[in-house]
Length: 548
Image (cartoon, rainbow, N blue to C red; front, side, top):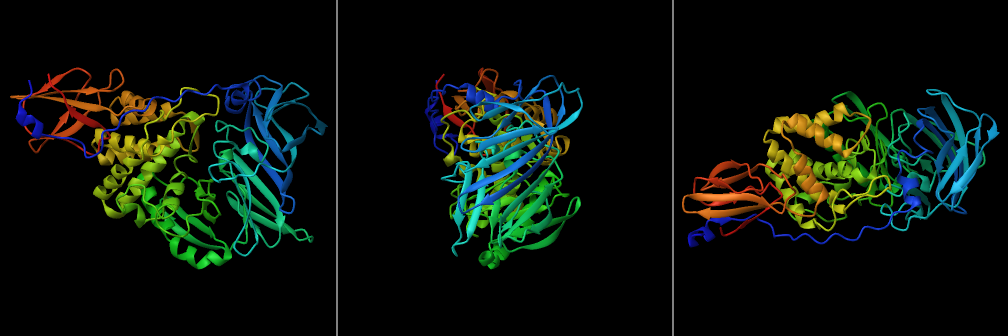
C-alpha cells in the first residue's frame, strides 16, 4: 500500500495532464489522390527528372499566365506514358517531343503524354509542356496554394505564389512529387516594368523587350524540390553582403519593397546570426553555390530554396506573438529563423512522401529552440521548447496511416515534433554527440530524397540507442507516455503506461535531490531508494502516482 507521506513526496511534471483525443475518421482516398501522391505509378516510375527549364509570362491585367516547361528526364525503367501534372483551371495546351505533338490523355489534374518511340534505359530525353490560363487564386497564402494578385500600399502589382502541400502543379506543369527533384532548374519570367522577379539560385539576366516588359532569368544549379520554386514579383529594392561561413564566402541578398528598405536593413540583420547559429548546429549552409536570399512578400513567409520569403512585419515574434509564452520568442524574428531552418530541413533533406513532412517541420520547429539556446544559453532554449507545449493538440498522429496519396498528418508535427527531438536529446545525454548527429544527417544525406525511417535509423545508429519505439510513440499515436510511480517504504516501483508495446525510453529523475537515470519498461521495476521523485521537465512525458 502507499504510505500517506508519499503523496507529498512525488513531484509531477510542470504541465497539465493531457488526454489523447479520439482519432478523427480517416477520409476516403480516391484515384485523384493516388495520381497526385503516388510515387511508383506507371506514369512516374520509369523516368527521372534531371532538369526543368520553365518560362512564362505573367499578365496582371487579366490575371493570366502562359508559357512552357521543358522537362529533361532520364529513362530508369520501362514505360511509354509520362504523367505531367497541371491543375485546372490551367490548361495543358500541348506536349511536344522531337518536334512532334504527343497524344495526351487527361485524368483529372494528371495528363498522360504517350511517347512515340521506345526509349532505351539510361537515355536522356526532353518534352515541352505548353500551358496557359488563369491559375487558382490563393485566398489565404501560405495556407492555401495558388497565385496572389496583390497590390502594395502604393497600388503597384505585388504577385506571389505559394504551393507547398497542394503541389507546384497548381501554377506550372511538372512531375508533381517531392520524390523527384531536378538536378538544376532555370526559371525565366516575363513581367511588366518596372517590377522585379526574384527566383531561385542566381540571377543570370534581365532582358527588356521594348514593349514595357522585361524577362528575368534565374538559375538554381543544385537539386531543388518543386514546391521551392515560387514567383515573387514586386517593386523591389536590393542590397547584398558577404557572410564568411564554414564553406567560405556566402552571398546574402535582400529584396524588400522599396519603401520597406530602412525597416528591412534593421530587422534582417538577424539573418547573419541565424546563419551562424545554424551552421554551428547543422553544418554548412547547403547552397553556397546558389547563395541565400530573403524576399519581402504579402503573406507570412515560406521556405523557398535559396529564396526564402518573408512577411512578418519587420518585427520580432510571429506576427507579434510568442508561441512559447515565455517572452523568449519575442527576442528574435520567427519567420527569419524558422523558414531559414528549412534550407537544411526540407530543402537539403527532402522527404519522399508528404506523410513524412515531420522531418521538415519537427526539425524546423526544434531549430527555434536551438537558435534561442545559441543566443541566450541552454536553459533558455529548453524554456522555449517546453513553453511551446501548450500548443500541442494531440488530436491525430503526426504520421498518417496512408502513403502515396499526398496526405500529411497532424499539425502537431511542429511543436510536438520539436519536443520529441528535445526529449531524444535528453535520452542521448551527450550534447557533443547530439550536435554531431544533426550535422551528420545534413552531411550524409546532402541534397538527398529521404524517408522518415532513414532519419530514425540514422539517429538510433549514431546514438547507439534503439529509438524505434520512441519515434513510434510520438509520431504514430496521440498518447503522451506516463511514468507510473508506486511508492514503497523502502523505495518505489515504476513503469511506463499509455505507450506502444516495447516502449523502453530511459528517463532522468531526481530521487531525494540526487540524479538518477531510470530505464523503465511496461513492466514494474523497483528502485531501492526512497525519496522525493521529480521527473526531468525536458522530457515530454507525464507522471502519476498509482497504488499497488
